[in-house]
Length: 236
Image 1 (tube, helix red, strand yellow):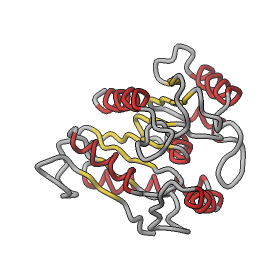
Image 2 (tube, helix red, strand yellow):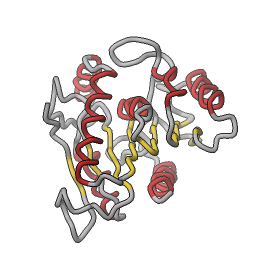
Image 3 (cartoon, helix red, strand yellow):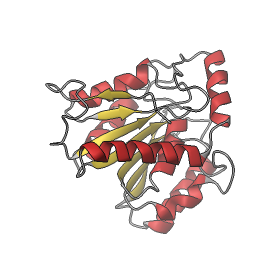
Image 4 (cartoon, one colour):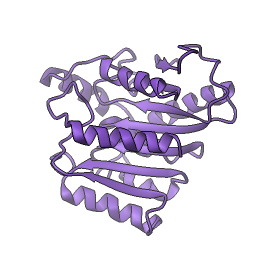
């Protein structure tokens, strides 16, 4: 099934898909429930401006392949409707297909996944794939409580993560309360007690969606720190 994605490549290659064979790493960007909207596309463009090819893919290709929402209450309701119709198996199939597509064009490339909100939850799922070298899960809610489509909570898959993983949460995020953060930290420490490969980053006073400057919860200082961690991971 085709995925309607957004590709951004460094200058001077612009959007030439087959021109990034020199790159060490490419980033797959996973969206919030609002789809591959203007803000998410700006993330890929910003990565490309830093010299890193990036590809934003939809998470709801089966029910809303062209989803592009704003941030109103009605938009949130619509996005959540598609989220509830999406399964972990579908997410993993789509990310796997994306990785294969990228590897055909650059066999030696390392794959990094960055996800926000539901895309953060999806990024944690994607981190279990063997070809994912680095994952950043920005405020992926519910990972200790459910798995999309049913089954054991996504957090139970942490032992399958072979690459590097950072889970990033705001301390003022009511969607990810302290109990959930503690569950995530415990799961990470059980696999990597030192935190060299798997770790959690906390952002004081930051709310859900703190990276997104199109939302009221945007926090500039936290977002800058988040971008610093992305850049650090990209050049690792």
